[in-house]
Amino acid sequence: MQKTSTLVSTILKTTTNKQQTNNFVDEPEPSDSIIQNILNYSKSLTIQKSKSVGFIEVVAS
Image (cartoon, rainbow, N blue to C red; front, side, top):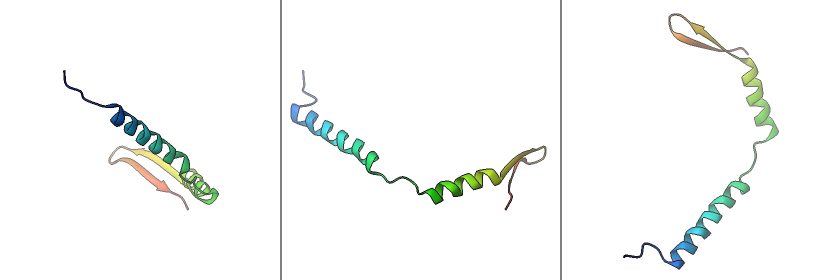
């Protein structure tokens, strides 16, 4: 039977996976102003169903 992996390759793969997982923790969070912009957009967005064109999206500003 042929070997498909070695101890060294398994350790390298594990180390690489741990490094990739740690990158998610280091990513910055969105600022408060970005969150407020998204919330304000969602409050002003209206989507209505239309018989002729499907849906109409209106942003009231």
